[in-house]
Image (cartoon, rainbow, N blue to C red; front, side, top):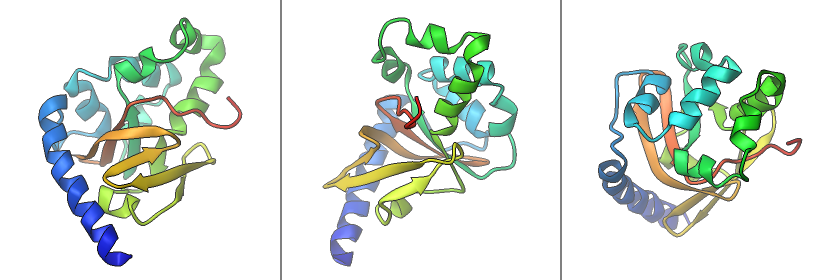
Length: 166
């Protein structure tokens, strides 16, 4: 079992290297917010963090682990959902969703293969599933892992994950 986990971790490291080239993400000495913003594929996430008032928090000392949905991931939501969430009257719901994408501490790919769930800043648990070389977070596929930032780590996911109350 342990040998299988090591093989999975090695396969993930190989996939990560290839994924960096396709996303434009690189390990960074910038914080999580600036690292994501610099990639050019997280414009919706950046806008949502601003609307939720979470930018300063994620620029803080951390460390944080962020499961970051791309613009394409947000585009998968039903039409009008993002626009509705960005309205001031929906700030509480937006904060709940965004903090569901954040785990306190620095959880790297080698840590992820050892866990079945993790407690989010939202307070709820996310499910972690490893199948071969694929890692799923509440059904969202991790497409790029271990993007290091000065205050934590980003794992790119292909879908927006939603907490139970949303």
